[in-house]
View 1 (tube, rainbow, N blue to C red):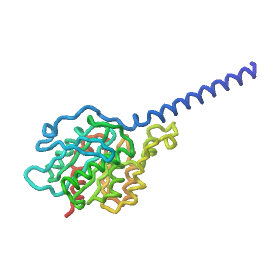
View 2: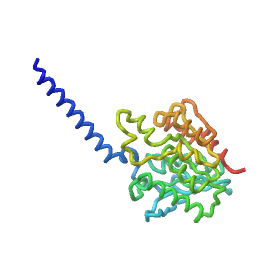
View 3: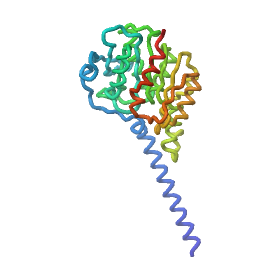
View 4: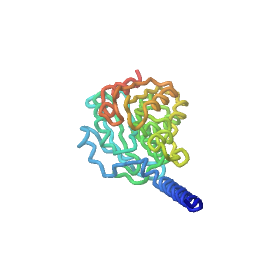
Length: 275
């Protein structure tokens, strides 16, 4: 066998592999936010058609966007507290309606909003953009509805855990519920794409554990024991960093009903209501 030809073939194979890796990396850099944010972009129905007694409200962001949201109060009584719900990276607020209904039945007022790019809202999501969006929701509650911070509970679902944790550092609520939080976005991305240099590529970081360690409010972390999207070990790390009460639901996966609207979840929120 000609050694020169063999070496040439090996070099060509290596070069092709390098080119493919470079192209894949470049594609991921350019398209990464399409892989992170998975919105249902269709407009949602009127609030009252989904949640009896709910109203459609508009949130105005600091950079000039108008976002849709639903606000619901408990039927026939004053709320014991108000919950600001920040959703995960998929769907839109219609998917959080069952949770809002359960919380309202339990005596809480609830604001469920969509980020930019979700639920027919204008704009494109990013880490900085979501920080603006959740602040618009917070301003609506504290300035328009005059709800004192001592009666506000922040609820984050998965990616939304990062959104409300960052908000809580600037605007401390009465309590914080983190459902399926990850350590940071690179950590959970590395679990999904272990063969790629995710930590080097990601522009959006969402450092939940780092920020949770600086919280000075009561925190409850709810984790599914068999979560296939956010490793339960990462949620436990966040709970430890925040000195939080940990509620682990054995056998529950990331999008199981028990983690979307289950009894344990509602009770965990109620445990944060000021007495």
